[in-house]
Length: 622
Image 1 (cartoon, one colour):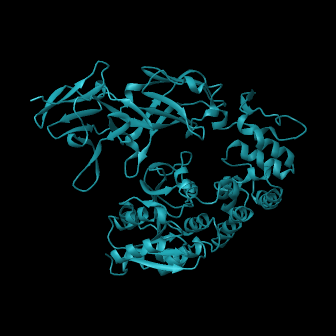
Image 2 (cartoon, rainbow, N blue to C red; image 1 turned 60 degrees about the vertical axis):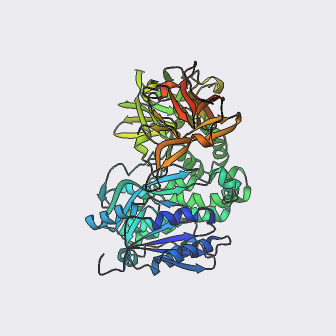
Image 3 (cartoon, rainbow, N blue to C red; image 1 turned 45 degrees about the vertical axis):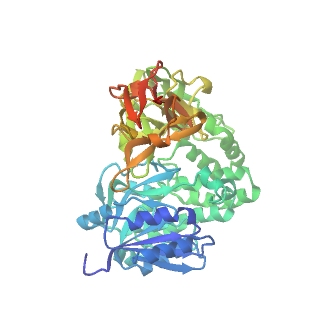
């Protein structure tokens, strides 16, 4: 450790009513592979049991320090911890999130190697035990980069404060702190760091799991304010929009005011997030429009941006005081997907297009990039051999170089996303029309897969989640004739594919004590194996085998003495997504039946007439 600093890294944990999640967060910190970490937990007036959880950990770990204060907001709590920090580098963590156990070692070592003021890694969303990517549209973590933010402006797409470490002396010198009292304090802090940093390094490794509250959490009473209530909260909206002026002042202070209008456009999509609220409440509508319109008026060349097409139409209606048209547009535009080609250019053919009543310039309707809402798909169907996605139509006057279907399997915390990914190139049968024919046998792991379209064109590489709204008259009851492969739509309308079959995935062993099933190393395990116990409602599950380090392995085990009675046939089942499937011999590598001796009796492991794997205890009559 450096003799100049008491710690290599100070981690400031922002704690407010996180009792249900706090243990996961603290465990991820005390088990970091980097030595020399100081953990400063700022309890911001929690009214639950969070403070007692902190005290238990502080008693056990001498590098944990607690600041207990009256509720003053996350920004105040974070700043107090940062100013108390003694580490060479500092970072912030939200107390319901989880840090990957080698994250700080990787980022600290990279900071020392590159002499960077800021080092960041890839964050993933963490929900219901699984991780998902935060951003598919602006994934800047594909490879390691050591950049000057003035020269790599794409870095401004990442405004999270907790997936980075900051050199403490750099943060102190340039006042890289959060704005007290503000809900949206992340962007100003991170923008300020980018404005003054000489070097920022990004690593492609996942370093942080950002927890999203699920319906399970809501049922437990751990949710934040409901989405609808938050949407109509004027103070919340004000805090979001006032960020614009703080950022503008930061650019002016740094002598980079000429860069502000271009860079704020990378962030400006967030200013439109509450816009649906104007349809629901007149008081909110007035407050929102009074704040948003001056911001849009202040941005130079406001329509010259990389936003999706509908944001510029929002802007036009706002700046031209066509509020009735704006409300009408918000009400239906996500469901209108017709396009028109004129003189080789593609336009979104809305009722406002070429309509003198609205007088919107034609160029605001021009489709210059693949837009998710304008993609059309005729059908999806799974049969015995293939998942067929037919007639994918991409409007536009650009040439698609490559097109893919991308399957991204659910991945648990700590597992590698790349182990659960599959890519299938689309067949272009006429310009901008594609078919997908995905061979089921090539998906060699059992999982639930989020389903995406990926297009490479004009130097772009863009990814879109396939949604129910992309399809024309889809029949949900007729998506599959394959009992093991089931396309389905989530409650949010996103397409997923449940694959419950993978040939030659398992090996099976059995002795006089137990049966053990091992999955070959082909990705994450998101299922369970069971047998019925006397009745189908009485299910007995195999247990996952732990290794010497108390980590789950890819093996399942069932001990005879807890599980089987005489002369009852037991069928083996695979359980995934609340559905269960019989395990058949094709799942196994070279399955062979066998007879086992168990306490003077015989356990028969065999392949039944329908290819299912079964077992029976034949009790001796002697």
